[in-house]
Length: 279
Length: 304
Image (tube, rainbow over all chains, first blue to last red; front, side, top):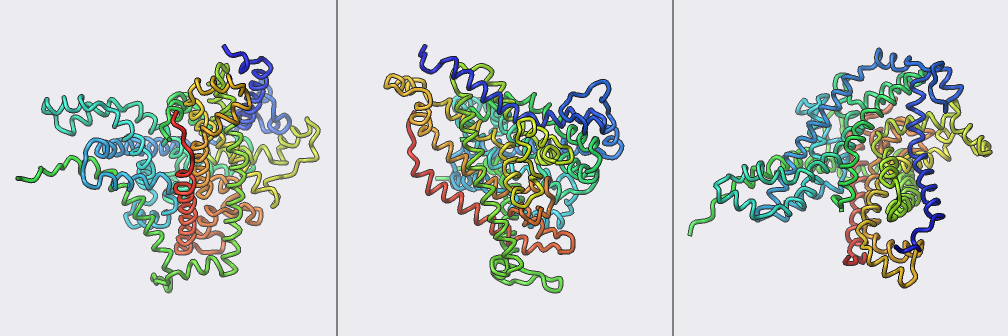
């Protein structure tokens, strides 16, 4: 092979740079996690030491469990994220199929109309969204969030999924038509299973911003029983700002579910980005 | 001749997406722009035309805050363009090196901050930079630079830059991934052809790879622009709605939130809030148009 591009000194320098940046990226997360398991004294005396038998303490987690309703927040986040993803994928795939499969008047215009939302952030319309949710009585319900996130996720979902649906073979669909399948059966039984990888990519893309959003939970659903994990931890930390054990534990509890999800889905996510789904 | 049967299934397929998208996104967007033209007098809505915008841009009480937020927002964007995107490109260039070991591991680890919420990122850095806890000063002490430490988030002159750098730390994974993907599509033959002509290493990056990934850099720039002019969460999580100290970290998102909901003694004003949203919409629209018509169409694309 070509030697010019692989000399050992260069390789060492490259690993050095990457390791340095990896440390920068992981250091804050690491510091928060290890200190959440320490006693208050140890947190201040030796912030960078790992918890030892002597300094180990779960007092922060106890406070969080007693004072905050983190299981409820977690459940709310879960419901909102899963339901929004379900609607984004179902409605997005249906619209993408209509746009990529059939030729009809206004096809192009409809495609452009749906694509508008890729670049324009939905937050600009917040004032009117809140007014609408108040008028329909949806304010402080999880439905308000699910609707907003569904609308927010649809443009990109339609765009990505219709690219993929164009690649599904016409012969397969026509064979289905000759066998007398309805258009709905063709879509649900033949096409959807074939674009499953693209649907997974769309799901992973949408999952992180929905789970992490602070703006809409803060404005549309700030009530105690509809708080999401992101808003719940923000409010909790704001109230317990001087109780370092509790703050560090609350942060760790917010980090852990996302980390677990990331470990499960990171391959899908990275494959999705690098396969050029967002070109 | 009878007309072809109306294909109802197309309507059924399109309807749910179009209805939700129109009702929850497009309609409120235009309704917000419409609300910006009204004001409230004695609990009833009165049409005032462009008066809210006039207040926003020229009334000293409002305009001072508005221009401050806009200026801060540009600075926030500039730091992202000058720090986040070059670091992202550099990391991607390193990662895309053929036969680099552990590339997948580095990639996954560097992407972790991007998946965390602003609340976690904001508070985590607040704690680390806190002079009370002392992690940042003692680490600087270890390399003999303790004199450089200042309570960065609490000082007017540093706070905004510090927050922008925190945001860079969080989002560097996105340009890294997109550029990485673009670099992978460059065929090996082109690089080998360059090698025969004596172009290797850094020269190959500047002369061959960089021109080929320019379209991706364009996409990253516009994504950064839209994301930054729409930012809110990090500043709110770290500094609160008042974007302290003394509004030095106020950007359009926090300014709009404060105006819309009110804070402390000031009452919330949905109409002025809409006017600010209208200004944000205009800025984002101008940015997107410059990209679509000014940059994207002129960029040279190479057939690979």
